[in-house]
Amino acid sequence: MLFHSSIRKDLARSFGATVVVLATIVMTIILIRTLGQATRGSVNPSEVMWVMGLTVLGHLTTILTLSLFIAVVSTLSRMYADSEMVIWFSSGKGLANFSKPLFQFAWPILAVIALLALFVWPWSNKQIQDLRERYERRNDIERVAPGQFQESSGGKRVFFIDKDTPNNQTGRNVFVSSVDGQYESITTAQQGRIEIKDGERFLNLQQGQQMLKNLNTGEIRITEFKDYQLLIDPSSKYAMSEMQSRTLSSIDLLKNPTAINLAELSWRLGLALAAFNLLLIGLAVASVNPRVGKSYNLALALFCFVGYYNMVNVGQNWIAAGKITMPVYTLSLHGVAFAFGLLWLMIRHLNLSWRNLLPLAITHNKAANA
Image 1: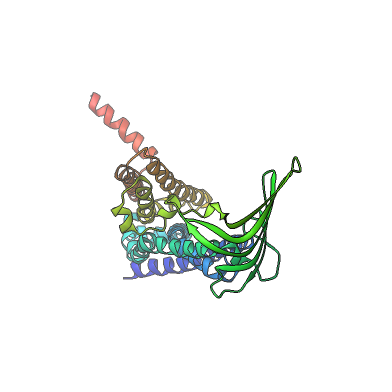
Image 2: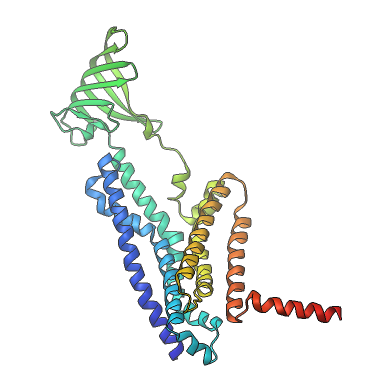
């Protein structure tokens, strides 16, 4: 059918162009951010492109949703501006009739968005976290080249280590200089090896001595030891947190329905539901008066998108804080958005306005009084 095919072709061209533009912008921003993380030592420089690709894949739900929304608004706005909508309206097609070809075009994209939000998003976060943790969990012995003085990851210690084991877990002729508050310590040992206890990394030194100097008083204390454990990185302790809920699969979130997990699940479901509701809102908001211009409608469409997505994020915070339950907020936000979009579409379809409704209401009141 000419009506359906022409609309789907216009939507496809607009959607494809928008995806390319938005993906390029997002990839550039993420690349700059990832390079900054690699400079700070949070990401392995050799894995920058892999981390960037996984991050873009995780944000693909937002890219596709926004691209679909922009494609609907821009395509229909152009049809209004070029008076094509007048032709379709004159042939008996109302605005609500555009919903069928619109959803015929959009349903594969909506399905991809749902799959990305529910399954690909946690997988990509898990992969990124594994890459970062594997890089950050490197013990400070692994960060130092043999025979060279080098700072540790935190920048508070200077190491000199001769590495002579294939697994890089043991080093000989260890030299450690560190500053902690008002104390400066210099530790030397014949041998050192990495041990992990309670999720924290320790450097176990054998046969050495430590010189501890008080920077304020100048007091020096020298201690010899046979076995000494030095805490390498106190920030490496692993704990279940809000960030880790992003790496759990949607099924695992349901199996462990804590407030944080339900908040994360609500956010994932919200992405898919928001994409569906934004189609209705985009169909309704695209109405443009050719004599007025389409700037107002585009600004209104952008406001609807930003406001809707912000409410999805706000709901995640409220659910995590225990202020509201997940079913109540999900039904309230997305149910109200669906009803609002459907009502707005019906008003546009019937060409109703306050100017038309007000005389009808006045006439009805007069007839009732008579």
